[in-house]
Length: 205
Ligand code: ADE
Image (cartoon, rainbow, N blue to C red):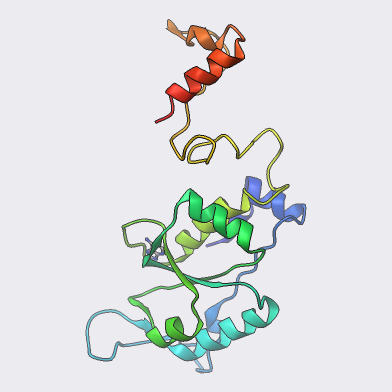
């Protein structure tokens, strides 16, 4: 399910340029079970299945050997909420990240206790797996890596940026100056930088 996403636009270009590298590890490949089983019923009863510790320990330990300084981040709705501030912090602090995607009801707590450094949620809703959440993280962080996107797309002044006080960005307009009777605000047409700046500041939400 990562293929389409990784082979599109910015992420594809950034990987092509060697600015970022993304590696997918299938937990089933690490299962010692002959049917490559990775889950089992929960102790104490209840619905759903839980990831067993063995494949996860082996997989994470193998990946950590290649990326010893990378934090292991478990994508879970129980985690700390992802914000642009958090995205910036992660992109500045680390050059490598290990993102762990859960499924089913969850993963054996011993994996979290022994190997997970951070738990992150992308919002207060439950996805059927952590993959979509991991893709959201990868996208948001990758575009901040220097060289990942063109010069024209500055991060400095965009929605949730520090420069805009973490607010939502001002509205954008392009040509024509009038379309179906709808006019572009006059102030943006006159080339008066200080006034444009003021208008933009006032139109952040
Ligand atoms: N896995 C399932 N739901 C999730 C969410 N909201 N955030 C991160 N990982 C998840």
